[in-house]
Length: 253
Length: 214
Image: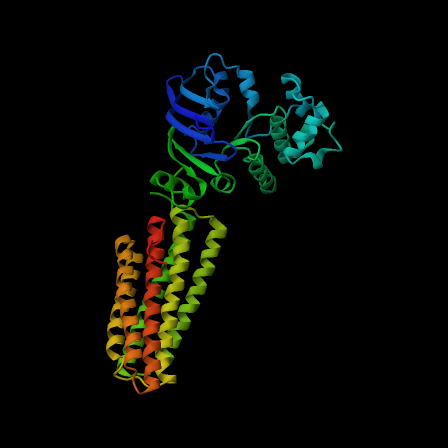
């Protein structure tokens, strides 16, 4: 395998019962880049990223064929430890979903389960994670406050910090800003770009301008197939597919 | 029936402005060449048209910025807006150089037989380039756009040949020399702007400019 690809997806097919959502999809995701996945509702965006941490396993009737390689190793191999996989591939969802606990406990939760690596104290992990998620300065004096007392944008950054606390390699974000106001969105967007220094970031978004702003590469999915994939600047300036052109210029979707 | 996009209304306005500018620009260059050949003074009229083009060019710039700010256009829409700004600028330059031509023999004087032939031929070819570049834009014709740069090579050859001729056999009348040289120089610049216009058209259609250009 080529080391510049963090994730290689080969001949992926995902269905729920008789419904095929992803049809024979191939894509290579670059390390330390932000990759945006866009497409109209129902095109398979969320299903695609949920195969990368095997979250679809939790859905009855879901069946997956093909290969998803993380650092060259198939994550669907029976020998794969799924709990460990989900530590390496963190996820943030559309609506912020902090635990009904304190700010501190939200971050400490994962490291407690997975164990604390590298001799760091829990306090250190909490501070480092909150700093990485650009939230530390806003909450450092009230770590014992309930996480649900934070604003929506702060809660979403808390969820990112919670994902970072277990030292993942890949961060999946599924519409992370769709419930946030423009100022909070701008903060999350800057955060996504700064995170790529240490992580591989994949973001599903309905917001084309967001994909254009934050991503290095853009994938366009339509009816479960990868229609276009390339450098974001090219995709938005001169897409090669008519379907992509029509979608991003608002002619359908 | 598909609902029209909000952006389309703005793009149509840009397109209308450019259509109007194209008409005036073509008329302005044609009139200034004709006036040179016939010795007519249309300085004031050409000045007015040129100012109108500059005014339209500003309107295109304002509209384009508004569309970018409001709609964050991408892909073909984005390329069209960039192309419209560039095409509008080139059309306004046609007008400005036409005004320069019309004003030369008024201020310097000395139009004579010396440059008549070359101005006539370069003028004809330049007009052909203007018409072709505008047609390529209006009909989204990539091949026609590329042909414009071929014609430009001939205009350049005529221009440099005339300069060499002037060095070898300068006319006695210095005023005539200056008027002729500046006139062919302006025509050569107009031809370059026609290539630039065609290049922007090509970018609008295909996402790339004319490769041999610059």
